[in-house]
Length: 361
Ligand code: NAD
Ligand code: IPM
Ligand code: MN
Image 1 (tube, rainbow, N blue to C red):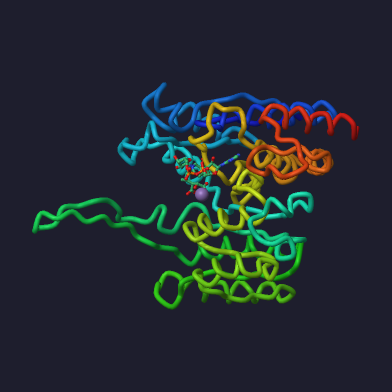
Image 2: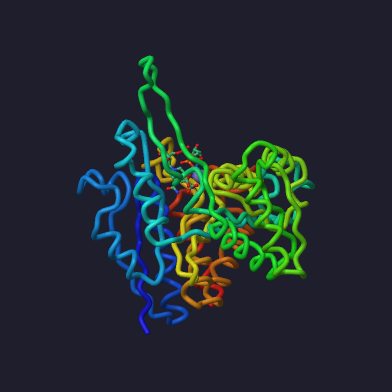
């Protein structure tokens, strides 16, 4: 049966990195006879420019029909002054909420070849393998009411609402415990329960969920300490589960442990495991158009897509092995450049992954 992938390149470096990821997808499609078809659509600032909406109806319809979605990144200074309702980021958030992609898996794995690209000492990050499970369709990102209002004294006030229902907490909790079962069997739930009621409830519900998983250990940590522990001793973590905003922040910090944010892939899944796959980083306006962005996070997101949504584990393994091979060969994009290694372009990194795939097969 044909599998349909919707490709959403987006803005900034999005089209550059997605082009390399699609080449990799095409290569494994052929090598492993996966019967994958893909088509592209507009999202983000480029969609706004063309249609007036960051998430055109046509894109949402295609996204709902697709077996999986591959997204580059959205946003950029060109659109930063737009009203919040039509900002590029709204396109991404709209996809996540409309498709109910509540479970965001962000694995931070250190490839041993990149130990010296990490900003931490090699011994602190050697062997690092943690999974951040971020709630993606609730919390302060989506809570109502929200806005900017004018008070009686004429002063303006901005406000957002941090809210989670028990069922929202329970389902992301189960995602985290299920994931932990497949790996180190430890979940650390991150909250701010010393200040915020919503996370007092979060903590309570995590305790309830833990009872369903007696084989998995649950601990709790306050988010400020968690940020500190991530840079002090990151290997203490196995699975970290947290809300939308804390997860956004902690995953960028975790990314740097692996050498670069350009290395971190992600999967955003619904209750049935249908998903959207994207690098954790953004559209990197500072390097867009230069052909130097690291495409590996996006290429590794294709591997996650094959594994989680397209039932093609062998192809996923092959991509991850090819990435490792390319790093063995000493090829690095600028963000992970290191002495004695060759600094290559986005395209050349794509070429190298393709060569490694062909050589393996
Ligand atoms: P960013 O992640 O785009 O960039 C942060 C820094 O990391 C920059 O110096 C950038 O050059 C570097 N970087 C990021 N990805 C890289 C890669 N693949 N290779 C090499 N270097 C890379 O974050 P930002 O600058 O805060 O945000 C820029 C825009 O991206 C904003 O409009 C923001 O809203 C958007 N954004 C989108 C997503 C997404 O689409 N998922 C995620 C984060 C930020
Ligand atoms: C991410 C991004 C998004 C988020 C933005 C662009 C809406 O930072 O995917 O991490 O905050 O979730
Ligand atoms: Mn982010």
